[in-house]
Image 1 (cartoon, rainbow, N blue to C red):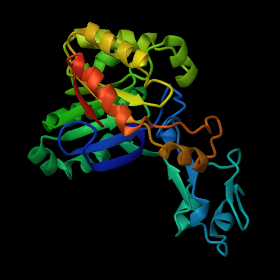
Image 2 (cartoon, helix red, strand yellow; image 1 turned 180 degrees about the vertical axis):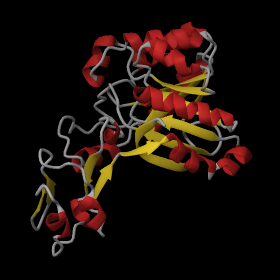
Image 3 (cartoon, rainbow, N blue to C red; image 1 turned 135 degrees about the vertical axis):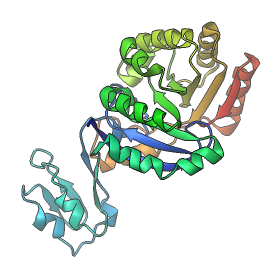
Length: 302
């Protein structure tokens, strides 16, 4: 049975597609967006997240139980030597204060389906379903496809949140099993896109055009980051490109929030310590009006 690595299952989600949804977060992403909200989803393997503020000074259970001698602590901090740690989870198991957490766990298709079926009554009553997010769900393509096949047997609505940065053949492979694509567009200028996400946007834009040509149900999601993609020129570039696809009528704008910054610290990731800013509420409303004037249906959130 196919297995995958997930880092969260969020129930009763209302911003990840229509109705009440269960959102499943898969690990692994090819992009490195500098404003990433879920840095724990970037790597394909489990990682330890630390919350030193929860750690009890007098407790040394995690240090004592670690067979690799990878955990150390003092009065002000707790640290993991990643070179020594083998992710045995013993430190997590003994920590009653939840100061250490391994994010990412292996799970089977059957185990995911067991979780999904608990919430089917909410999907049926609200017109909701399952959303796959990440990370980038398509990085675990075999696992994702196996899940989609099983979910389809249950007649549950499926939404896929994707960056589109993958070979189109792989995207197309699962396209008939997805009811709604939430397709992320970050920045239209290619050089700027590569600077802030680590990759070119050419494949992403080309795939969106091909996917739209197959007349799939698509909502474009744009994370708005102040000073990066919220100026009039950037907004007009988004609008004109999406207009050229003809089939896409829905744009969802998402305001940047700083939640990812704390996660970087907890994961001891130092690559993107910069804090960005969200556009003001007034500016977001202006951007929504620009898109609406182009004829799009626009909403804030998923």
